[in-house]
Length: 534
Image (cartoon, rainbow, N blue to C red; front, side, top):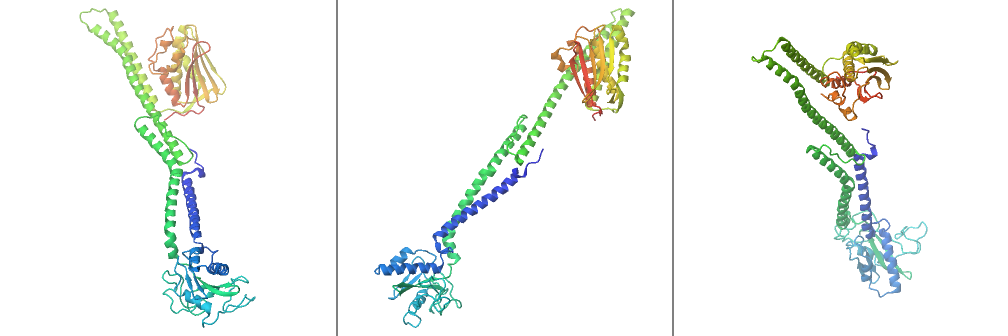
């Protein structure tokens, strides 16, 4: 059985299927994560604290210029509702507005107020547009020219919370880093209206803690992840395992059917993976089992038929022997010597007939069972035909039958057991002599063929009816049942069966047909280097 291609392997399909499935799940979950976190856009790199503070400051600048009476608390908390970025707005009038969605650090408003009024409580100090390469306490390279500049540092505020960001824990207070004295790290952007600072926007510069992000995003991401896992596992089961499971179930049902005695059942073979190879091997095994089962059935039938045939064949001579012996043993009969001798001759003939039948049966059993030692040597075909002539010469002369012999070049020798090969040809010749009428002809020929050497025995008798040709090698088949007009009595009916067994032991074949002359023809083809089967 040829090996399967690697890309059609079941293991390869499972591996690639799961890798593709996991990659798809990760990609989908990544998209979902980005979509969820995109709604909280402060977590994305494109929305930094400075940009967030700058956006609020620019928005407030427009509102204070166009609609000074706007309720800034409602406006800002209605528009900026992110839960991850707090803000504080301190106005010039001393009003403090804080984000309601998330609590700002405790002292962020104080830091913003300090930036708005100055640490000493004096007027605000916010110089104009930055000079190239300039510095100063409020310089910030992130601000665009002509716009309020965000300032990053620490405002005053000794009363910072425990972590510098109030109860929600935003920011990380502590010493060092930033500018100013105390306060959480933050971005400060002034709100300018007509060139004057009217308010200060403060946004913590630290990213929100991961615990808070996971607290809000963990549940939806977990639900999405579990849903994707279940969906992916279901798709994988339907696409990868269901077809394989269906074919394995077919294989299982076929095995049960064969176990129940349905030897003709076969498993479905689809695809080109290991399951298909398994189904193919199973079908081959089932075919072999069916053949052996049929052979056992045929052997049992043959055994039964053999017993019946043997019983029938032996019953005739036994009945004759018993009848004549009982007749001769009857005291009231006065048999003369001539009659007694005739009866004894009949008993002797029937006894000899039984011996031939039993001998042929034993010989056939040895041949079909592979018993006995066989020689392996070159055999001259011409010498084989010569011995056939000498053996049957008296009968041939008595009936006026002509025996023709022809050996073509390349067919003068065969390899095998000389005694067994002579036995096979002698049986075929005896069969031909028995069914050839007086004055007929028997032809023995040998010619080379592709498979080896063909030995043919042909007669000019009445031939064999076509319907009887398939049965001529059966045990106890009587040739004279289908071929009439013969003078010699038929044999035991085992001769052709013995010939077939000898030929098969030599690795050859035998075929029976009717010749063009009308008689029967038997062709034996032996391999050039025949080796007896063991």
